[in-house]
Length: 75
Image (cartoon, rainbow, N blue to C red; front, top):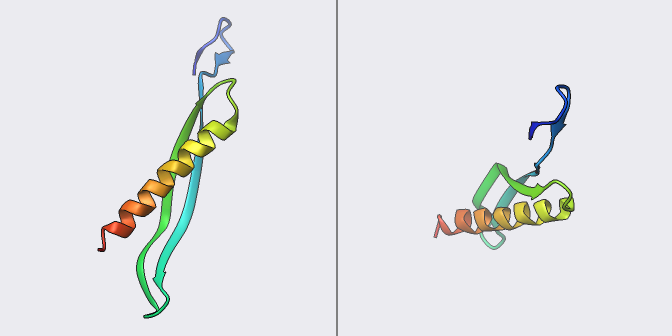
């Protein structure tokens, strides 16, 4: 944000979407937790005037990548 034309006003330039999930990857044959993260979160950003969906999709893409990275860290 930045200060607006008047002293008591601000202009919003960018917004954020924060998504937080709990993830468990389970080996169903052995009944073992292969990987888990109880506080996985990411931020998606979008410009003022754009739909929130843009920020949400960015956050989801980042979550997917972090889940893949986390799962591969145990292989």
